[in-house]
Image 1 (tube, rainbow, N blue to C red):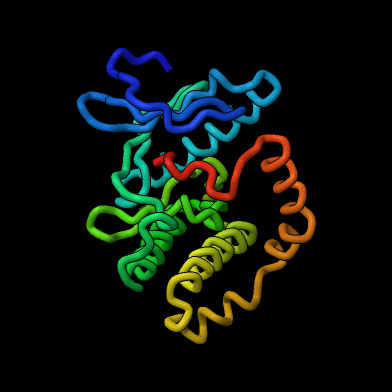
Image 2 (image 1 turned 135 degrees about the vertical axis):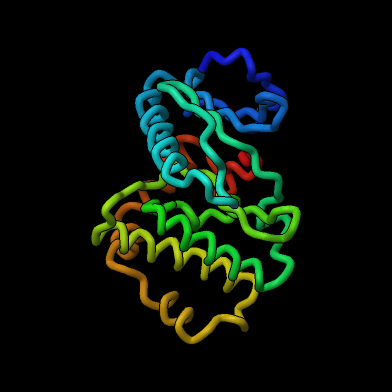
Length: 218
């Protein structure tokens, strides 16, 4: 992405898929994802994930608490910066955080977007006012009209928020929330049985990622 108004300030992340920079854009903080430094054998996948993120963010335009798409092309994506601290570092101030996170997730789903990566606690931020923000939409799916697959993916998004709530406030889970947690969908069971072991092997052994990879990518 060639834009004379972008000034790189700090490298937040560098991996096989490229680089993530905190930049200055027209006097404001922003985040630039650049796939040009990606390894040649993963460049196609890095660009595919970039397109997924661009589609999802475009659908989420105007929703507070998620990054806003500024511009994108075949090699880069520029989005707004959300000031906040990763949930696993800051912790929620109180249970109201998860009420706000659920509200935000309903807006995301209402726009036709399933996040698909909310098991990662670093994808939740605690904003300066204590409210929730959700980031990192590389694996997100945009589907309009929404079908059966979307509903299953959206339910998994909800289950992952409830898992984080259980970590911090297990005594505040409602009976309905406990029921959702105890009844994973067929999609979730398939993922846990067949996909997750392969995913963990590739990400941890091949790419060298940790479970909290990307905590600085806001």
